[in-house]
Image (cartoon, rainbow, N blue to C red; front, side, top):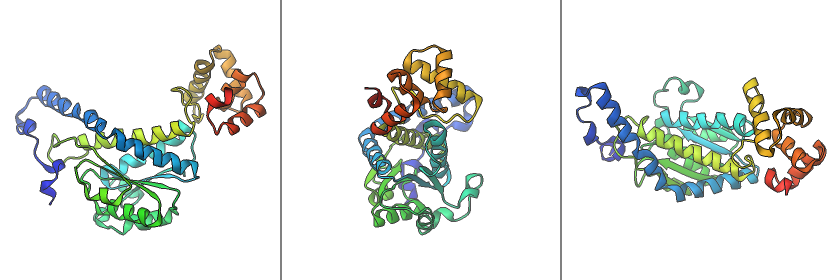
Length: 295
């Protein structure tokens, strides 16, 4: 029953929310938010398993696919659309599906999350294969759309991960890895866009970023595969090259041009004092890892 879920119980620290002044309300809300990273910390081992599954998928030519409804679905989509500009991946590499389709991003589609067959249909349309990893996001841990999607993923042999904010969540039994972040009752009872939403955002950040690091999309802590889609990102790329190699800004700018606007290639060209062709060959041999390419 929904009333038995931790995410649906009343928070004893906010029982008089409507009688608080703004300062006290914000203070108690901030205190509650402080509990989120501590709860995420308890699930590090499970998140590590999830990252390893996604790395395995990427190395096998597969994808990371988030599925969810409402806030959870939107968080998956948000993480997915940020991966191409940050890590230089294709838009197919990380995908986000929300119950009700794209129109549900802005406005809830009535009944969509209650359909346990809809996610399977959406995943079939994406051409889900055994090489992919499906991450199901549901704060309650009981959303039919997510359960159906994870069940379908498991049935065809794809990796599956369940992310929820309740212990013993229903969706956990449909996944290879379960991540249950116990953030406790929300500031406003049942409003899982709050602590639960924050927790899910932290978890998807960790999954996608950890997986991208695991396939060589980062050198040190620099996003060396950043896509140069605007002036700010072009300037960032020059700064990345300068930071990675210690060369002056002007030299970084020159090598960025010579590399074909590829920061990773430019870094290898500088460090190995080689041309673009040799740098690209070194990176290919190193499976995209800059550190291995220059050593």
